[in-house]
Amino acid sequence: MNSADQTADLLDELWRRSAKIDNLSADVTPHSVEDARAVQASYLRRHTSSGWKVGMGPDGVRWAAAPLRGDVISSPARLSGVLPDIEIEVAFTLGSALPARSSVDQAELAVSACSMALELFQSRYTRPDEMPFPLILADNLNNAGVILGSGLSAQNLPSLAELKITLEADGIVVATSQGGPSFNDLLVPLCWLADYASELGQPLNAGDTVITGARIGALPIEGGKTYRVNSLLGSVEFVTD
Image 1 (cartoon, rainbow, N blue to C red):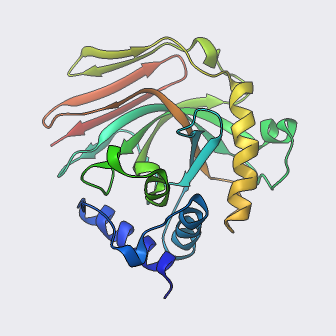
Image 2: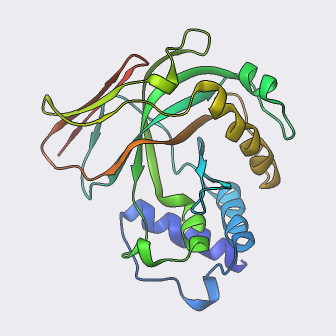
């Protein structure tokens, strides 16, 4: 077992236990983006993923991506134990494979539906803000799962650039968003992701879920509440124990 395999297995075990560590030991620490990509590739060979997250990297110029942890959870959902933060996002569902070097037109044809989604956002590190980017990338960019809500076919979308989203806790609005990237804007990182996923040995396939970046969050959530996201695109609901 090489160090990338060890890192992937350790971070996956921590995710399954909702546990955290201060840092990785020297022998399994990724020191570069290439090292972190090797950890992601190992994760994809050894553990279950149902899709990807993609968005702007920390430099605000280049894209970054990571596999989703575990199976996509359907709304309505129930969360218990150690509660993650949440990010409210627009998700794509792919109706067909999207190979490397795909055009924007091919990406548009591959998207069968858009839905509201919640990313469960939780680091495996006790102080993630202090971690170098390769350690965050190796940790699948803080992904701890996804709750997928309702949506619409890609041919019947409201304007995603002007999409108003509200987050309610027990019926009280606690956060809003007034817009974000358009559908066409989001096809650009999707094409980039098709190349990235292929390079890691797991090309984009029909049925994959792709979350496209936070429109609200990351936000902490509280136990004993019912949360609901509403928009013209769709809704997501979950309760916390």
